[in-house]
Length: 343
Image (cartoon, rainbow, N blue to C red; front, side, top):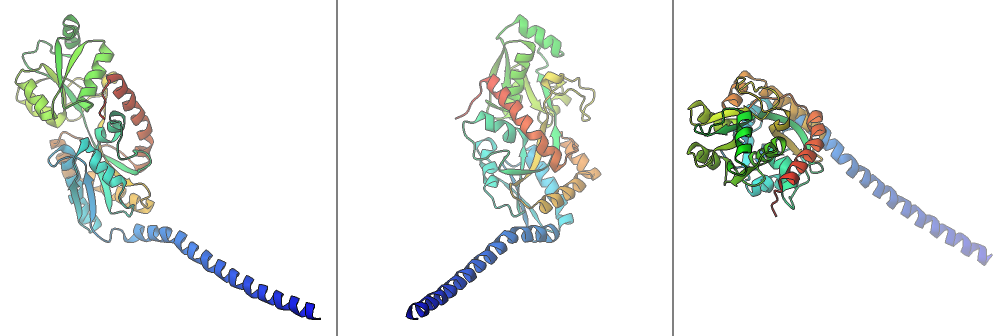
């Protein structure tokens, strides 16, 4: 009997112990469920109530450039439609790596976004031995904002008046024709390398600290040629201080349809894009995309882009995301072929 009583007592204790453990497990499960559901609830709330405070556009380039001006124009247009201030913050440094890395590490709460130039986003990962961001894993693409063509220009005293004459002159003077760029690994440097490879000519690369300095020396006749962005060199073309040989595209640009194209092998799309940190709620991304698309469709915005030497482009979060892997692979090969590298 004593044995049976002891057994019953032990069973009662175990029942109490098991019951306590079950209660604890249920409590932990409930807490976990709340934690899992919280981001979804927040995302749904942000989709409807977002934005509830000011938004920041981080521009990883210095003030005054095309990317900065485009970001500010879009930000200004968004303030009315979203009902919150959109602040543009310039975080220049390391050729765009500093600001891009900052946004990659930002909270994915729908209040910090990246507005960047194509070269910083797709060329830097191949050019630098290490960058503080992963262009695929660290960001959610929102859309392309605009594209800007690049032009091949020469000093008016240079004998070539078109691409074929330039190639013939370079072949007759191997290693004697210099071209200026904004620096090693920049888009105008890589365009020069692409021209060398496609046309099998020997050109001498002369890097400068910035596109403006490169264009200025070509205007002055210190060097014969350069590739420059439309807004950077077109004023010199219009004033007769530079001669344009072609646009780096396989189709004419609406900004100046009379300029001949350089062809498929030298077709480069230089774009400005809007990105969110990875993990930003999709309802927020979708709402921002629709708002920006509306801003870009306004006639006054199209005119503003045109004065910058840029054009609006059709883009969605899906199409922008889909194009990035191939573009990153393309520029990785171009950089490899050029031999450009920055530690």
